Image (cartoon, rainbow, N blue to C red; front, side, top):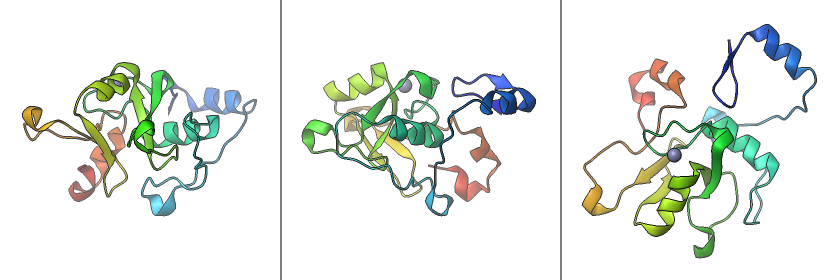
Length: 151
Ligand SMILES: [Zn+2]
């Protein structure tokens, strides 16, 4: 079975038949660490190619517990554009609209950790030591050795 960008399951035969008519993109990851290469640029709005790489890497909203698939997400700057953030695949992530807007008006922050995963850090008064990485869109991580599963 294949999983579409919207989360639907497709038989592999159907996927191959549909893909034969598609435009193909290649996303390259450095040493399998989820660090996407190339495609970086310094405009505010992410390019279609950057969105494809973000979709390949994040698959959906990166905030803990959010199930919104990548099709319905916006590109979120880890460091806000107005504060000097860059529009590179390494400095952006997927976030659903409400949470992308929420971070603008609250003291939540986001950053990429050493495993290349986006962490959403709550303001101190809301920090209960909760997880900061959303694993919902990456169930394969739960098949990894325990040291590689975490944030
Ligand atoms: Zn979300």
